[in-house]
Length: 174
Image 1 (cartoon, one colour):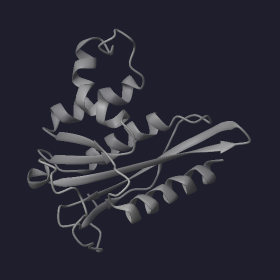
Image 2 (image 1 turned 90 degrees about the vertical axis):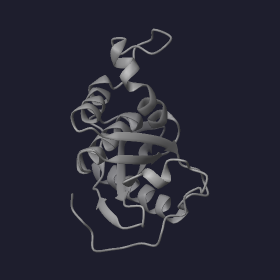
Image 3 (image 1 turned 180 degrees about the vertical axis):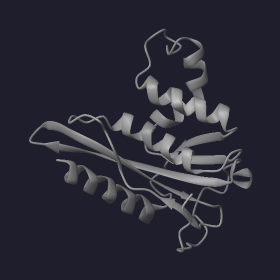
């Protein structure tokens, strides 16, 4: 893990979050996709990992989708895996991501895998190769991740910065 020399004040997270006292790291994910004249373009996702006192321990470059068309959900899962590959074995991570795709996936990935990558409605799960790597990381490195959706009032300046970085990565790819 690359330690940053920059230290930030304590994070403005919800005080009623039961998992905060036990978290080793807080991982923030944000993503963007580029729309050109009604056509979808590439997507990108960035992450930032902080300790509970707000110290930045990893501030990644954008991870871009593998296709020219937008696949923002795939980029989010890839970013989650990338961030988890950065933290130490046995860590407990609280993950904040936009929307519910990551929160649902983090909660159900092991069940999906046990059902042959099918959800509770027996429908195929998307991005199984990356979700499989997620489950592998949890099992082999004894990691634990609890994912939450970012609320608009949480870390607004950090969200703005990460979103701008993801947008810039999309523009660079196009």
